[in-house]
Image (cartoon, rainbow, N blue to C red; front, top):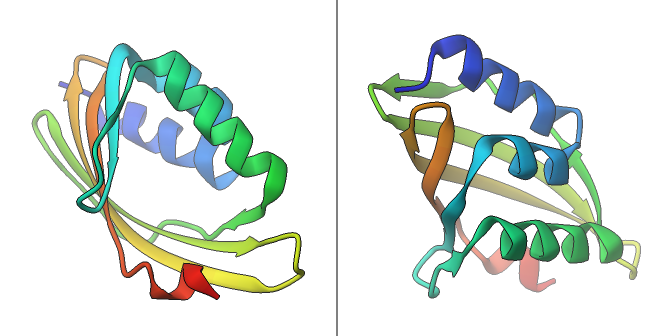
Length: 120
């Protein structure tokens, strides 16, 4: 079960837009991420590569988290990101991340959001 301080350290790293390092530091080797109803991506190395690719083509501003809940091994975080693509258009993503932690590592994460703003 993660401590509240661990969750706050994870959130702070993402708020600092250090997304790749957050995955490297806080996700288990066998972790999975799932976007809405898409198939999950599995394995920390794949998660890091995917995040790095997104950040290569998109400038991301992470807003300060105002809502997160911790219930044992279960964590919910409301993230808000402004994402600016190569076209110069900024789109806002307001998502809910549901996480399952094992100790101080995330083992499963699923994101819920409306994909319409990302379609441009």
